Amino acid sequence: MNEEQRKQQAQIRSEEANIERIKNTSSEELIAKYFHAEYEPQAPDIKKARKRRKEDIQFHYDFSIPEDMQRIGEGKKFLIRTYGCQMNEHDTEVMAGILSEMGYESTNVTEEADIILLNTCAIRENAENKVFGEIGHLKPLKLEKPDLIIGVCGCMSQEESVVDRILKKHQHIDLIFGTHNIHRLPHLVKEALFGKEMIVEVWSKEGDIIENLPKVRKGKIKAWVNIMYGCDKFCTYCIVPMTRGKERSRHPQDIIQEVRHLVAQGYQEVTLLGQNVNAYGKDFEDIEYGLGDLMDDIHKIDIPRVRFTTSHPRDFDDRLIEVLAQGGNLLDHIHLPVQSGSSEILKKMNRKYTREEYLELVRKIRKAMPNATLTTDIIVGFPNETEEQFEETMTLMEEVGFEAAYTYIYSPREGTPAARKKDDVPEEVKKQRLYRLNELVNKQSAETMKTYQGEVVKVLVEGESKKDPDVLAGYTERNKLVNFKGPKSVIGQIVEVEITDTKTWSLNGVMAENRVEVK
Image (cartoon, rainbow, N blue to C red):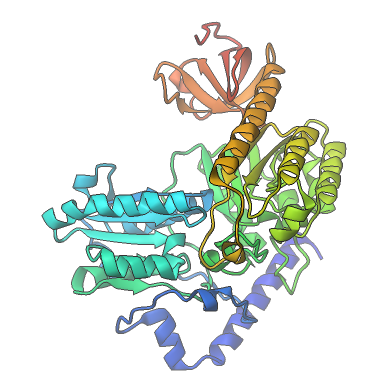
């Protein structure tokens, strides 16, 4: 069976399954789920969200803005503040696309906005504190502009405690909706415009896959492409399986079509997104098709760079390694979160791999791609982490040779198993461990950067440097930031830059035909 036949069969099976599910769904259920003739508050339920139902996911290709909402935003502006991961960034692109099709215009000036949405992250307590701080700051503006709509969406909205707190203490919020019903935004805005009560619509059951949603992407150089939603891993510290739902993959043909459209628009790089991106396709029942197969198909598309994030070591299989080893537009920068170097802590985290298994995976990757760049995520101070267990993380960091790492002190999240654990690690000890780990991360990053001295690297130029408008900035294939002087005309292009100076987290250089150094 060739690729086209496989795609056609998958599409037919999906359509047949959708028809069968609709036949078995009562008209009342359909109306309640998709039309909501009358608004009824739907608050999150963490217990329902934790359950994994056997219900199939439906695919919808018929999204449209209701006729009475198509120009409702003419002459008005919206602002979306985004917190958290790339998935939130991508969700913001979709919401911006929907609001734009409703006639609204984007603004970065808070006082100009007629709609303000806070697209939130629930991974760590610090992120929540920032959002609640912003909610408080917006209250005077709401008093000054009563018609202003303020909404809270994203992962925090999926938490019962967050919604309860907003309901009790922040009545100036007009709208709360979750991660599964972004496509309902036109209906929710309508309710907020013409209703008198706070609108709360948060589905504890994850939503279906809605294709053909409009997007307003940042720039025309790099693009996010979501390939799946949700996570089934249930790490004991993580709230994501409850806020994003179970794993559900988009059809390969829809992803490939989206990438082809991006190529036609001139994009130079795509990043395939998922909470656990290398679990892609494991939920398919009618075809055997995983991330390795998808990457192999995208490898044949004429786009210079393809990345993916974020991986779980447990799902990083041999097929994916085999495909990535082909090189070309498949980049060998791999972000592979380990979280801890201790097998005992990994077990308590429910990561379902050991230190030894992680190192064996790294060995396989290095064998297939000797020059691969590995980066990671690490949590220190997990409940009852001993000094010896922390030292195991330090030695793993050195043994793997990570070139960068996102490091965090453990943050308990309500509703997760780890939050119920008694923790006997003093806060000061946690901070000291984080400091020591960061010193090692900085040292390894700086040592890696020194190896680029005098080398010529290919840089995708993204624009002006944040620190100096006379300097251009972009990233290498291995995700190293490079600053250099050059003509603005090369923005959006891949150019060769000779490295003249190295720093801990960035490189300075000159274009091959432009010898003006960056100081």
